[in-house]
Length: 302
Image (cartoon, rainbow, N blue to C red; front, side, top):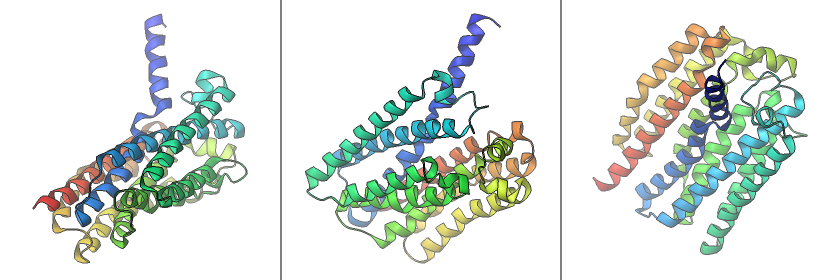
């Protein structure tokens, strides 16, 4: 293998380790919560939005890096070439970088709360961070018990969306809480899809992920139900008046939903073929989130 090929391979591993697409789970909930606030109240504070967004990205960086550290301790990532810990060979360095990201992210949230003289957003984000830690962090490691998707739902759905809404309006909203379920479901789908190709490693490390418990065939059927529920919940919220009729444009993400469900249904038992399903799930997540935001924002001007 030539030096050029090795360099290209290294760049690919680092890109996979950094996981750029996963940072959408920091951006979308904040953008959705902010757009719901604008739809309901007409309020939009750009400086609050941008501060929150930057802080959320840093907190996700902490979550990503610290999870690599915690996974390295259980041996589950022994065959994962794109683990940041495996790439650097320095678990301590990765851990400290993760904590610096967390400190900077929380610093932004504290600054935001100070400006507003209201500490509810800080409280919500602290709860979200604690939930995020319990996913892989000792002594909890709830992800190893198969509870990761539930944690994802509440952290990136009701938790993050409600915090973003409150940051704009200084009040809570039942409508925001209801709509946040769409983001919670689509976020959990990303994590759910990440398990299909790593059953052997999960079993070896004692991780009882949903796919380990269900098997890939039943897991593919559960994925189809979860994906369909995004659109069912949207319709229920439209009929109930929580979402405007214009929110039907979220159905524009159906091609991504079909691609995800059909791909996993076909390749669920073939690790090398199904390993990209989480990236297809990210496409569904991004498209449905963007269309949801667009419907809310456009309705505010119509």
